[in-house]
Length: 224
Image (cartoon, rainbow, N blue to C red):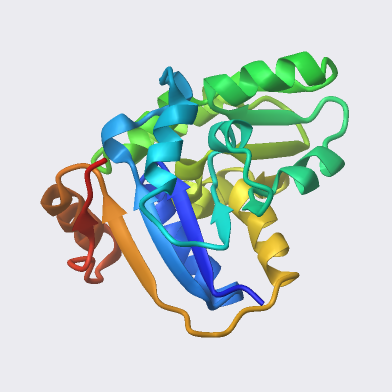
């Protein structure tokens, strides 16, 4: 039985992902979005930095939708969707991810296509990017691949839009893989979420409220 999960990430897409995860495993979530240090994929000394964040929370499992974090975390109780991802990968599949995870996969798999999707993630992170920019970036990334994996936190924000653009492809998001992992677990069904940012909270929650027409005023600022 799981009571407490620490969801640790750098992308603002984690805020909406956490609400989706709660539908499938209703336990207590502490969500820390370290947006001041975004993107983690380009940060040095990440492992020590993550350990400082982890020490601030009491938890049983760590969850992350950024595979860069999964590469740096030694915690055995890690929910990251990567076991399923590795099991599904087939030759000629396309993986759109961040630079650090791309570099990791290049050493492991020579038979798949890999793209550093940092530019797309950056555009989504700022909220105000016009959708045609997202469209153009996606067209520069995606060819005729049948199976496409979106392995980074922020891509989930535009999941519905991407599905409309590519209706006949098999599109897999890291959040989908994590949802499957959560469904296998049992919880105490308390289901509260506490959300923290390392950046200026007001601009973030106002942008979230404008985009999703819901209140996000409960988000707190946290420094470490």
